[in-house]
Length: 175
Image (cartoon, rainbow, N blue to C red; front, side):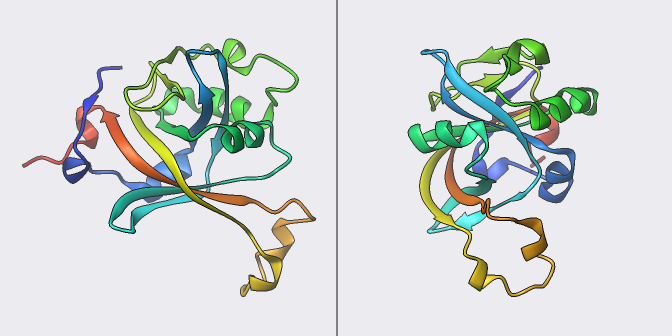
């Protein structure tokens, strides 16, 4: 994939479309060979504390949870539609049971600012450092459609400051 660094002020991310297409969240340390990816379709992007930030949610029962708890950073990667079946597999299979990266055929690469890897096939890479987390709290659920999403496995929300963005020209605002 032909990606280039994109300054945050020139980045043009269609957030709703990308969350619907899914991102690949990866936490860990590429150089040490200790990392795990999972497909995510829930999250937010925006500005908080005067910083560009993403929010991702991970259930404690997911294998990736141990990695995102242990390591200070993560990547969030968007892929072309041709990778949809790979992202589906990465979202339903566990890294506890198999080598998901090998099975996916994706090519992990070192990232420019964080230890977590990015992928050669990605169209967009957001390199993020964790800056805050919180656990979802059932008494705070105000809408009746939220509680049915859970039994007792409540997501932890991670805020990641976007440190670097790399993407194809379609993610760079034309000036």
